[in-house]
Length: 325
Image (cartoon, rainbow, N blue to C red; front, side, top):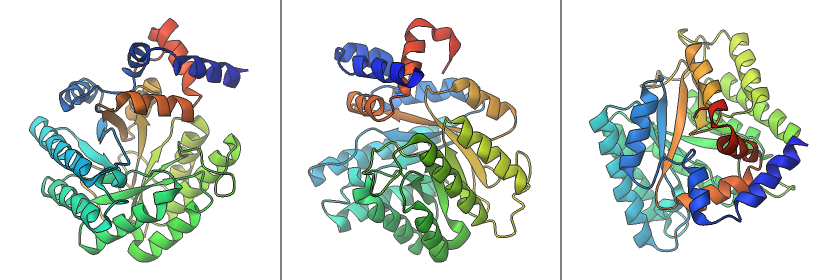
């Protein structure tokens, strides 16, 4: 019943005028500019949060468009540095032209990763749909070969291939790997991915276990209690937790601005009380801060591909006090 109601709210919302979608999305999107994102980060820094910044937009049609993302991420690095935020970058390889001109796209990505490294900053390669899974993983491996180890990748639990991807990445760079694991927002075909909720959760939890056992850094990006509770139990089983030096015998290098081998990550505006609870318990909790002119496209995609947001939209409208961002 709750699921049907949530989907109904989403179906109604995506058909509403753009101004209404903007009103709803202001909870989940920092705004149109880096200045908007800075205001949000100042507010949430007082709660002990750290951040990942994402300039909205993905696959481009011309290499000239990649220049925008290149320059905008330079502005992001400057803003993080000037404001002394505990923050990292999240970039989509397709936004830098990796599908149009691989060599130039790689040069664009490398320039941002190097600049971030100069500022002691981490870069996360966001994962898009299955067309670019191989390319995204390879970009990460190529950066490591160049000595740029301040870069990690996202894997999606719903994909059948993710466990074997973890195994292959472990063979190549071992515990230097740095993952964000999520269920995956892209609705992939049933021949390459799980499509039902429980199998997706089970597969995601298996990936978390495999990542932890590989000695890698593991960022668990989920708002689902079954995933979070599984992670907490898995950490306890391995002697990991807040204020404990990573005890895994195969643990990777100590990373600046990171937790003791793991952290939790959540979207801006989603389950703020849970994030604050994890922070109060001593866990590192990172907030994903998206901003940009593409806020409308991002908002519609999030609503369509994650219908459970519908209940949160309903609460934001009629009971805003129940789920403070």
